[in-house]
Image 1 (cartoon, one colour):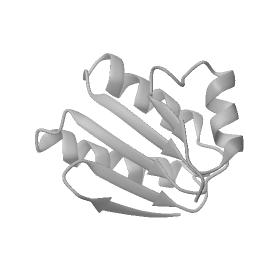
Image 2 (cartoon, helix red, strand yellow):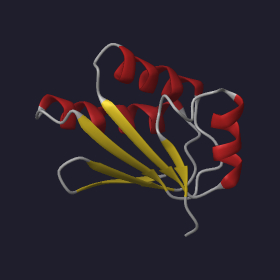
Image 3 (cartoon, one colour):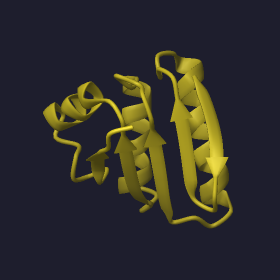
Length: 99
């Protein structure tokens, strides 16, 4: 997995999000943006087919407790379907894009 900070409030992830270490790296990157005052975070998950339960829990906390507006763009329909099954499309403002 590779993560990069793009723009004021955008995080771009390439590769599969599959380990606790991947989740911690994403969490640290997003926490840095929030600490700098970002209240709108755009997470672009280009090609991962899944995300860890740790990541889902963190994103839920971010939205519900921290009151951060989250926008997620996913490039893999399997991840989109997973988030749809978990009923998280609206909470996380998820959109599927072709890459």
